[in-house]
Length: 124
Image (cartoon, rainbow, N blue to C red):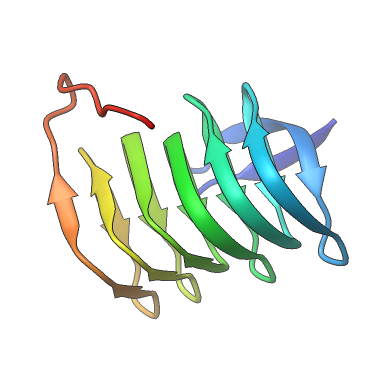
């Protein structure tokens, strides 16, 4: 099993991995943690964690529990738990989340709506 450390130094077991030389279009749904390092176009839907690697490029809307962004995302993000934009990460789109962390060196262009943790986000 692949392991990845997030910024809080907690290990997450990665259930699926889309490598840097891969490209996928469509709808991705999953449980647990998934890491994308390649190109993805479409929609991501999960209640769990998505890790967007340094070389990743995602174009589409994302509905997740938690997302850790080290690559580039063009689209809107709804996160029921947390959004982390790491140094080098980029978002061009609107976000909705109860918790947001933006590191120095990250880029965010769009609108942000902060919601209460107990308020459920309506997913499409």
